[in-house]
Image (cartoon, rainbow, N blue to C red; front, side):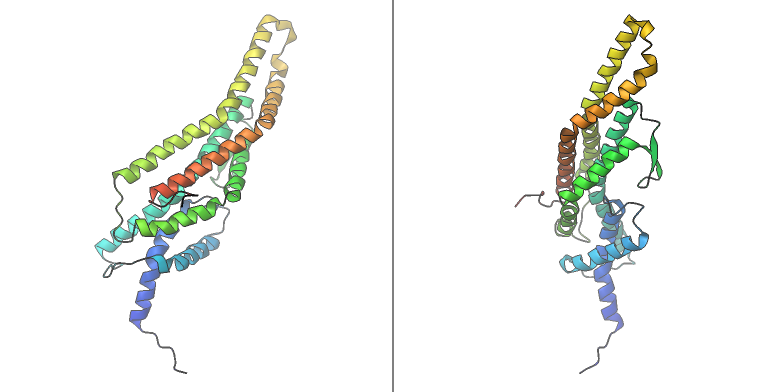
Length: 266
């Protein structure tokens, strides 16, 4: 049995093979839903990054002569981080839209004062915003969104190869336009409930104006709050359907961003 010998050239080759996919994966882990949450320990994120980079390394073609310490290598490193961040950011924006929808409903219901510390953002967030975030996370996992996103990451090495990836105007424009479209979708999710609550407030205003002696102002908050919960309960199926549609659109946008096949495509 011959002893295994290692030399500096072999170690350098292995490090180079792992370094480039690890850069793109690290950008992905920094922004991808669930993996990027502050509640996930840093050690878990590091292990996840190295594990994915190790699994994806055989799919990666590293150009000959691309040095880590050269000017071209530093530019390629920045591009790798940008690509990984963009893939996760596309879907993360959908979750931000869900939080925005929950905040809009909370303010209309009068629950704007009911806030909790959001571990994802480290700030106070209305409870309905966190409820929508939880529903979105459960829906995201139920449709295997994390696997679809990892598949888009793997396909990105084929369509945006290391050292030859071109981040142009179309790439950045698509990312910006998707962000605007996502917040439109979040507003549309909240719009039916907001309209129903505004109608309730208008009815209370008319009744108070017509019969001031009833003093509906004192119980108006309770009526609005109960009406909001009732509308949420009745429209829960529609809300879940809209959340699922939004997340599917986000996953398709992430796949299109890197030139990969859309989820469900052959």
